[in-house]
Amino acid sequence: MKERDDATQRGDAFEEMRTTGLLAEICRVHGEPAEHHAQRALELAKQLGDRPNIVLNTLRVATVLFYEGHHPQAERQFRALITEMHQQGESDRLDTAYQHLGKCLAEQGRHDAALGCFEQALERRTDPALRASTLAAIGEAMRLRSQS
Image (cartoon, rainbow, N blue to C red):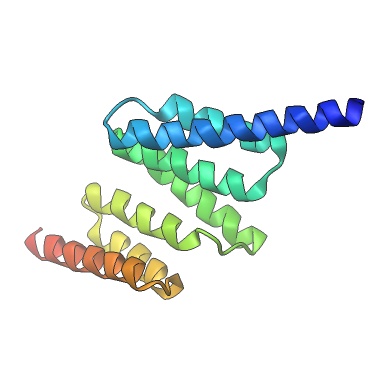
């Protein structure tokens, strides 16, 4: 019976993590405060020891920080995640981490560094729509760099 209770609790925590993470996304998209939800989803992923969801929710936290205008904090989160992913030999979502770090750097006017991140993202992307997004970001960063 205890094993079943543990499994039920784990399932409940997983469902809370999933829905809280989605709530963070919805709030972010609608311009509502989302950091608390993203942090909670990350906390739950860590409690569960669910590495793919730790990566996903760390990206969510950093992305929320970026969109809420906390660029230095977001940059630190993206950089720490990228370093950790390289150390762990992980590649899932690494392209996304580089792309979002590039956006964060570009927003801070650091266009050369942003271009380096976009190039890293492009090297890892195979999906045509994602590659197009990265190529557009490269073009915009180059345009902005030439204006500064």
